[in-house]
Image (cartoon, rainbow over all chains, first blue to last red; front, side, top):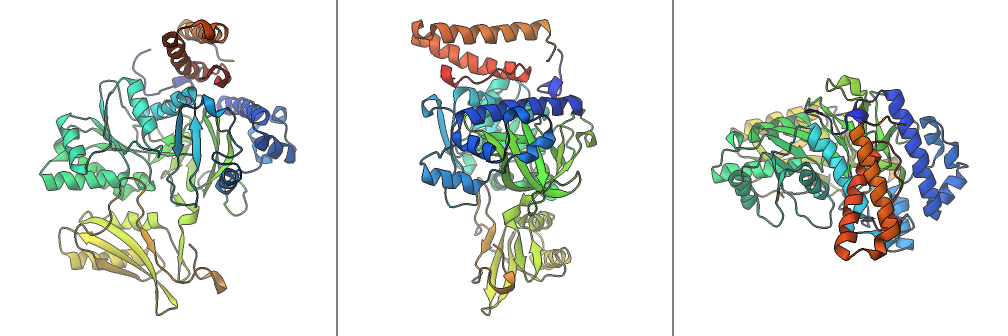
Amino acid sequence: MGETPYWNPRHETMPRVELESLQVRKLRTLLAWAAEQVPWHAKRLADAGVSPGDVSSLEDLRRLPFMTREEWMEGQLAHPPFGPILAAPEEAAIRYHMTSGTTGRTPIRVLDSMKDWEWIAEMWCYGLWGFGVRPRDRVFVAFGYATFIGFWGLHYASEKLGCLTLPGGAMTTEQRVRTIVDMEATVVASTPTYALRMAQEAKALGIDLANGPVERLILSGEPAGSIPATKALIEDLWGAKAADTAGMTELGTIMMFECSEQPGGAHVIEDHYIEEVIDPGSGEPVPYGEQGERVVTSFGRGFIPVIRYRTRDFVLKQPGSNCPCGRTFDLYEGGIRGRVDDMKLVRGTNVYPRAVEAIVREHPEIDEFQIRLYTAEGIRDEIEVLAEVTEGDAVAILEQLGKELAGSHEGLRFGVRRADAGTLPRFELKAQRVLDEREVIGGEGERRQT
Amino acid sequence: MTKLTPGERALADCYEQLKAALQEHADELPPFAARNARKALAALWQVANGLDLDPGQLYDSGV
């Protein structure tokens, strides 16, 4: 077979009817495995009156109970350290990881075997290959290589592809930038925020990244990889194309990737997952083109069966045919659009951090920003954006930003203040730019939602 | 069931043979052979899975 844009051509271009038939078959196998190996799953299926052999269509999926992070964490607390969800003996594991998620009081702890790790890398291969990464590439991984699963899978995928893999752990940002240039890396993997941070550092060092060796950026870990203004800024600063991907510790790897056509969204890896989109309130499915919460079922990680897991991620699904790449895998337009739990209610107006970022990033003069919510005069919710403006007329830029933020939030008044350069926090992983210092939580009329 | 090309069929056969070799002879193999065979089986499982051969799980074989 000659050069192909697909990692698994048969599956990625499979007619939808056949693809769904494959998913149903894999679902039956998964349910049988989970019921046989995990009493916790067996009870849930029995309580729902479902026997694996009964499943004959994707519609039957809706008969299965949702699985939540809260249940998972409660299970861990009751049966430490891993909870009652392991389908294989701990001795079969070769690696431990935990989530660094931005919600929840307890980390989720996971184990994987040798086969599972090959599968984790396999999912990243769909993304790397689909975005044009090839064995001739040199892949720099700007990542801390610790218990957060992050880009571990990408590292192994890069090796599997035959790329020269450059691990970027335990380095300062300056060292990373210099290594990228000195080693002539053609691909860089990082969070969107850290891609911006490295670009700032390069500028401070007098390094012209835009005319450097990097051709592709693989972004993950934050929704910003699909925010058009942020992505455009990253591509401009690096002189490279950027692809969004998204994954979760609960799955061990990515479940969607952006192909080289850059259709403004990411393809779901549907031969390894079933992704449902539901109304987070009712739990009912929503159609193509309507935003909802993604619910994932994974066929790949046998060690921890994940069945109808409520991710709390907002997505908007579109048919794969919306992308000219030829894949039949559905698309999540705009990638992960935010978290169900992220929404802030400020004086009756819904504020999503992603939406604020999309507006801020239209101003490339702003290097870093922070959203701060606080209580004024003991009763009133206020919101302000602190911004480091490093170029241009800061007063005019911030005035314009304030107008744009209000204009896109039903007239809600945003305070906009200048922060001194370098004073706002920088992030390597999962940026947390929202500082909620309001005093009242909930209360009459639910005037606040955190 | 997927119709396999000759190359895919050969890899699917490799997977089955390697799996059987480990199930039947793992205890007789020296460490270098047993552990490298497991590593290879983990990779070949991805091939069998990608070809829709329903390769099952390998935890009993330590993979």
